[in-house]
Image 1 (cartoon, rainbow, N blue to C red):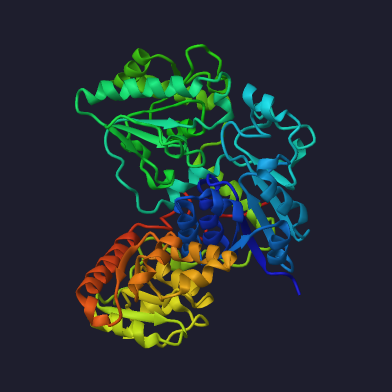
Image 2: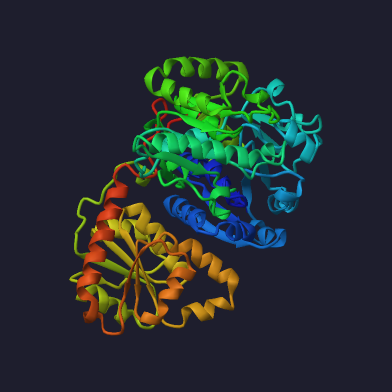
Length: 557
């Protein structure tokens, strides 16, 4: 019997989320494929604030995917064995920093097409600057069968001769994030300065970081004199100013949310040292300038054509011009994109990735109608809840919900179509016990699809029990990071919610549900309202103009 086609996405570096996210939605929309999220334990170690684990959980829930945490390539192989389809990674090469994904592709069954993406404009193995060459050399090798590049081959000057036959030009997958944009946080006024001070690009001289931070501080103080804030975005993987507790001016506003949750056109301009974030703004049609250190030690040749700035007067002049006459910078940016031969049309990028996935294994089905943007449960009630799971003390959770004025139904299991059940029944809240494993995962997916709030309940002693089982704790971290509300039945268990990195409202009840009925009711109502608001226009979003769900012709790559 043929193995079931799967799309497997490998997450190792934190910035992988931005690159792989739209492909999860594409795979679900076009093919209805089973989607597996393989997350390395190193990813979870790097994610100190649990921001990106929560994002993975949200994406997996939205596409009805399954998350697996792996500590070695053997763990990953155990998940892949007996399956087929396509395995995609956003950061893979023979270099030590990519070992967690490189080794998985090396052992993946031959029934999978193995794909590596160019994850940034300047990217190891695709396009280098001098610092990349010095640090890594030019003989970069991939374990992938296919490497997906942004540009035509002549532009990818670091792609080795042994790897060129693998190249498929798709364009940057992150362009498709706009098609699947979820809730977007208002960015505020002004421009955005981006720091990637951890990058090898800034190692040309020892004091480059000091020079940049001094210049940035003077830039901020200038605007601070007029009562104007300055936005700063740390690199998602580097987080230099936060990890090093850099003393920043009082008028600095940190913008640290995923870039796909920001509307970049809210900003007047962007300033950064050489970094792919500049390309995000160029593609969004926002004036962008590349910072060159005053000594000229950094290699910015790959950005030739964009506005280049070094000194404070140049920063101030660019910021003023970007706000008053942006057409000058935007004209240069259009010429830059044309000269680099980057595929930028969203329709074309979508089509190329769809063809690649279609040829990895037989197409199984058209896009699922339940993933149309804007679908709302017609009979949604504001005061109804569904309790999912077969844990022993279900009555305790039912009591909490009842005391808050919710009509609760406990007849549900992971085996049924929970999303349909929730939509048909009009449940505003889906509640589950945090320790009921696969049932809780099914509840999470169903809640996100149907637009209901997810409520997780914690019990005493769970934190200490999970302390002895780190792999299980990591999996629960991904699951519970997406909870809207955490109900803790004992005051001692606050630490457990923090241990899981649960970014949710937390209601603590000593023992009897009645003691906290008012606070529980308010939190439940707020969570349900928030879930309903996210669902309107939230992921997965309408397809960009030009391609209808289920209607795109699929041809050979």
